[in-house]
Length: 141
Image 1 (cartoon, helix red, strand yellow):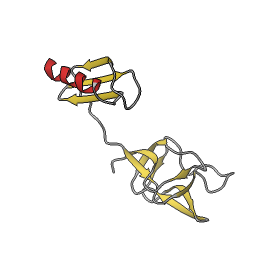
Image 2: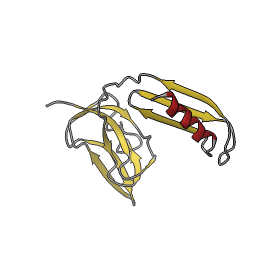
Image 3: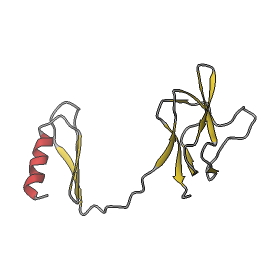
């Protein structure tokens, strides 16, 4: 990104109602912020540019998600041990939690063999359809 483009961006931000702005083009990333009241133009107070941005190899994260809206329970009863915890290896079809919906207890099973990396919800928490419940690492067969 050349200096002329950066100057144009500063002018746009000065005359806009935005308080923050960031853009990434190729291996250049620019973040701008300004003081002021939202909705009113003002003075740009900070411009930060990072060059080059290193592209890290990103592993695609895998999750076990909630199939329904309801309440998450990590164990079959309050006194019982949790179905799974961080570090556990889970087999395909193994129950990992219960989601209560309309007074019905629905067991959630793993669709694949995996290791639990993180439990993303707490016991008794309301969950939405499609909400990630567990971050997992797939295991090779």
